[in-house]
Amino acid sequence: MYNEILSTLLPVEKPLLADRIERMNKALNPGIMELRWNSQNIEPFINQAMTIVTDVDELVKKMKDNVKKMQDLMKHWEKPLFERKLKPCQPDDVEQTHQSLVMPRLEDVKNHGREIHKLMKDTSENIRPDKKSHMWLAYVDYVNGLVIEGITRGIHASMTYLSNQ
Image 1 (cartoon, rainbow, N blue to C red):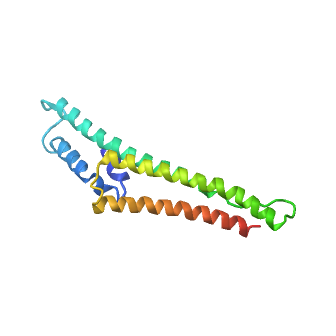
Image 2: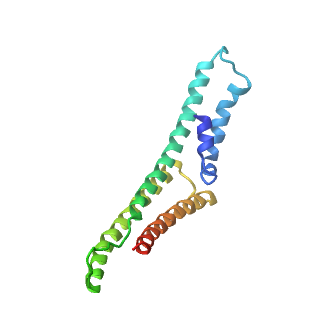
Image 3: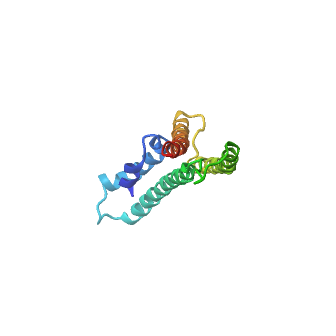
């Protein structure tokens, strides 16, 4: 678990968990420096270290899961906003068809935005950062970048669809 925690954390996530990583390192240090498998009182050390490492592991998984859920929501935005009918249409019909696709998509994006906000709030409640700290603001910027990427992919999908027509 320990190695997985350290190897999967992104540079923007690591500072948010620095105090927990330090606590984890302190808890594991006796096992590295002093204790052996046949040492007395090894069981309490193992139990305490496992509790601390497991708590950090669960927190990291929660953060990662929330980001994954955000990205999954944004994948829905990658469908083109245009549809081409097989028969010729009048411009008004094309506009009406387009509007019938845009309004539900706009509503989906708004709902997904609310869900992304809830996921960010969940992450914040779990790690309890100082919301004015540079570390938290960097993480918010990271997530904002993911949202911008999701919007860009949606635009790209529509433009690619149009260019292929």
